[in-house]
Length: 407
Image 1 (tube, rainbow, N blue to C red):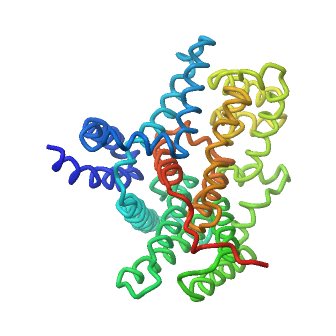
Image 2 (image 1 turned 120 degrees about the horizontal axis):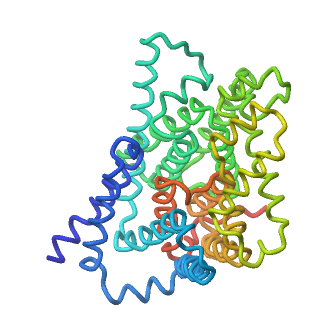
């Protein structure tokens, strides 16, 4: 029975991440696959592996989740915060259940293939919309958003992960698969630009800059390729009015309608974070937090009182924007200690892996996305967070062959 479970288990993990972008269409499927993994986990897990887990960086994940649960129970707000806590526990459980998959290529391929499927779906959907009479201009986001398989920020995250994983899977020596990985990097980079996803574009450029600090085992052609991407993005930024709007919002009231049409790109987070920082100044927040449910309620109250423009106020109250920063959300919800435990896992991981480009790039991308989104407030975000925890926290010591260049 164990032999059968060991042979099936990795493919279930692959299926989970391949189908994850289609969460809105097959919402129950990821949960069904998760249940299947939970049932098979005792069969594929060996007792001796528990010591390896306890010696890994994952103990910080365990400490963070344990603190969140104990604190919420002690303060009597577990029921109110259950929706968020449940997703945190889902991320932790998934990261643990991915430990037996020792060949990370299976997980990476699941993400890579799903990203290609998401690109193809979005392009086909866009063609259908155009055939129905929708107008479309290159780098204009209004109809692109309607055509996307899932929310733009998560599609940008998926494309960034696909690029990072494809880079990791490239081989220095000749390998017929290298061409496919390079083609995927080009496809995903172009799609990120097509998405007009400013966060993903920034992450992609920072990954290229980060690569300059490391010896490139895969040749100067990757540096040339990365520089080409930067040039394309820069040119697109200069030539595209819509892309500029994603980075710099015009405060002219005449543009309020355009703001809504572009899903309120940058300014919403500025308003959101101002409210979050106001809440953070409350005395009891640092010690125990306000709870995640109360934090969301406080955010709505802040929008009601602080936003003067009635159109904008109605929009914020309708969308019920959360904090849009996972670190700040944990601080407001559970206090400073909870946030420090959450951050500690990433810090320890960085200290262990700082000599390797792949985990450093993955960690940097994760932190940037966490600074712009509450991953634990969405099921799809919880699943991707579990994957990232598994890939980062269970890595062995950094590869000494990939060292930063000496200046």
